[in-house]
Length: 284
Length: 284
Image 1 (cartoon, rainbow over the protein chains, first blue to last red):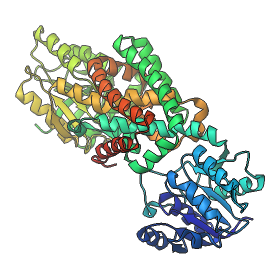
Image 2: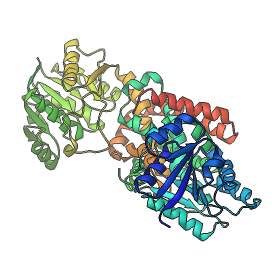
Image 3: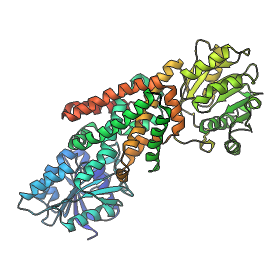
Image 4: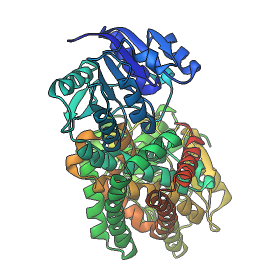
């Protein structure tokens, strides 16, 4: 199946709205239902063409759905996925777009085990987004060329994993398969720990020095502008992974500090070279 | 005087070439002499129109100069400024574009005190640039709308400070006056410490996790791509300032870590909010 009759997007923020816009632009779904708590967000999502109908009632919103994508803040995903599983089509597949996976997959699969309905859930995480929120920042091309991680578990059925992968590929993503655990370790290193550090740099900058801030400070601290409540949830859900990444970062930082304190210039140069080499391996 | 007969730029990298391009585009100098060590850079600078003539001989290059701007890596600035002061026009003013000021101003002023020639030196630091180097990245508009710090000392004569300020204003900069000491403390906080931290994040990222790196990691670590040798010099020259800023950053980071370790979610939220607030006060 390359096309869905009805897709329901739960949570129409930046990610949810972008999925809706991409599905519709690429004519991948006849009906895209937007489910949300706030009428104002739903209205905006409909106005920009991200969804074809909207409701604040989850059970009604997923009733005809063959594919449900939960795009809310991470703490609500598991609950909403389980609730959706009670009301969607019997052959439906549920996925999500959360930045953490281990906790969500565990909670959903535990819940589904004790359910009479055999609905498939496969977690996913599109590595796209921005420090902006809200459907008005949605972009149909948000996922093009970006990696989306799909995280099957031992419980996942192969065909539902394939379908979720197909979804993201159809939206333009490059799909990477990882276990939920590997995913969380990996994003701790390249997203969650850097977020925390960027936020600490911003918070540690005395306001009276900001007059001199240039592109360097602005780039380095850009992600600190992300929604604090969303990030609190992400950091807490991936606490173990973030703390391990932070350990690693602090060790490297301590070697920088030591080289500076001891005036070990050759060592300092080597450390800066290592940082540059890692950074340059990815381009701009 | 709104126009210079002969300006000599010593060091024709990104900053030197941009100054040359801006001077010529705005018709602020009849002759712009480029002085450098490598014939290839000098040739490039001339080809893009950043300078009108070039030489590898400093004494010849500054002979007719009324304004000399030293744009080399910071460790060479003081020596070259003092050497230039022996050969330039008697009414010439010397300035620089280095990212540190305290050490440079101290060395140059000490040297000038024991000199028979009464040449004026006033330090400056345009807060512009990029992780790129070389004259080929020069831009005539690099300084437009950017802050340039001019750092007079007790020894500076008022009219030479005014003239250096005028230079940067004519290139489109907003000029801020600070003491060399205040400058170094300030840039430690908004540039040098963040550089070190960004480099440590990049170096601490396991290569096998880079596949998932997205715009967040790329923004946060962008400055780590800067030239390691230039940054070794900057960090060493501003060692005291950088270590003090690092203390402050590490304290804030420790509060983040503690909140995460102890699952203090309200505290974590507050910290993220503080980071966002500081970041958002500057826009994109």
